[in-house]
Length: 100
Image (cartoon, one colour):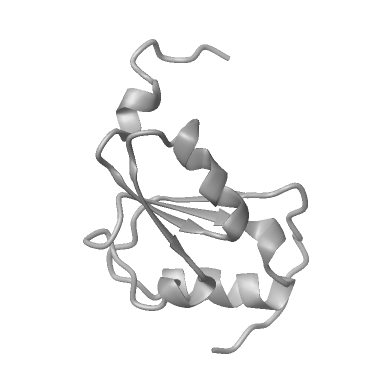
């Protein structure tokens, strides 16, 4: 895998990152240094759009499967969602019906 020489932490400097999950707070001193970080819960995903953030990072380990699925479903209802990065050591792939 070749990584672009243009990619660096400078790529996020000044960008608005919505960090969903308490474990992501530590990234402000490392990979997300220089980004404008907003810590939030899954409820913040309701009605979120690209006008609110340049990137959404969600810690999948911080939430029960049903709550995480509801948050992702809320994102799917947005007319213009920002890019989303879902991170975690366990990501359930079981299909479930979720209602909001």
